[in-house]
Image (cartoon, rainbow, N blue to C red):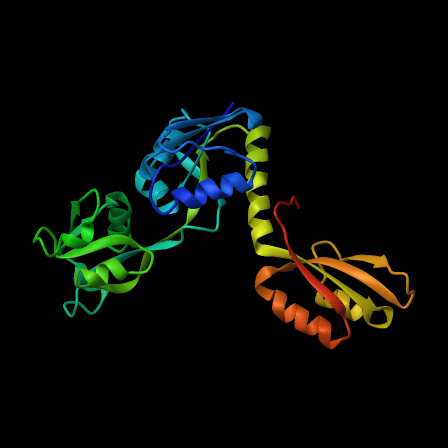
Length: 281
């Protein structure tokens, strides 16, 4: 049985469950449960604190886990990232009281409140900066106002919470993060794990692409196929009128309106766009 850890709260929790449902797992989830059996897929899901996921996976107690890249790095657990999931993007940033600093170098000698001490210490060591880390479990943005720190280092999505606390982000990100799948270092290749990963990859492709169908005169078919090359190549079918053909191809969702405009300009008609709910490439 495949044993998988997923976040029980935070910004990764709901997107992770939604992706798993789209991949055919977790058909029914009872709120509040810590462990969910999925007999249809011979899998078991464990809802854990996001920061603990990599530790359980690295110990070998669980086969896979969904967590953030920042949490994996901070845990120092013997686990590897095997797949980016395309959601939960964030950055690890330094922030100081507004108007008190002009560059990251100003952090030298300061007290920095942080919930990711390993991540921060690694960055300080790499940049040969000496500072004192004040480890907190959360709400680090209040540390300066309460007098326990001079700066903060935190995972930031929009920066709104820091600004509300009278802080401003200083310098470039120390670390870029997103949701990932992790696996124990040195784990043997397992077909069940490969199937799980392939399903999630299929969800990401399905989210990124749409199917475009259209009719085109054969005299401009080659030009149309250049606009919609598809994955391998577009599907071309005969129509009752021998002067026309029907074409189907996968197109990036972000590009689809421009593609439709280009097709229409060269004479394509009956242009239809359909969402993809699942796929394997």
